[in-house]
Image (cartoon, rainbow, N blue to C red; front, side, top):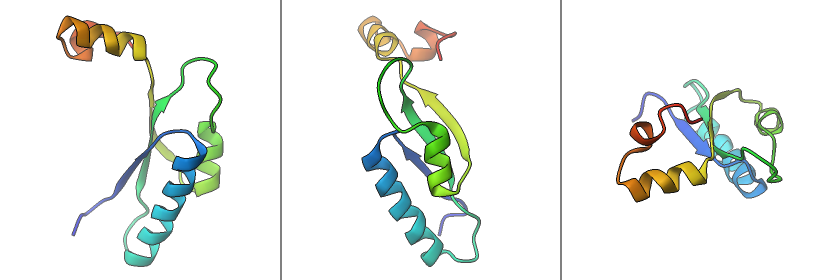
Length: 93
């Protein structure tokens, strides 16, 4: 009954497989509706091997709506300070 569907996935092979399966199911169940929007969450900021945003988008034939970077050090510091991330580090990615 939703007007739009948004899928949020992490940039790894398991999430790519599961997201592809979900996209196929949505196309069958909602043939007359627009394609879901796709958000890539926990995009690594340095060194970690994963599926790139371009590969993820190309494999699913769906453009990414947004990419959310992973910054565990800043997140941990905000939690320890008892503040939300935006208050603790307003200029973080």
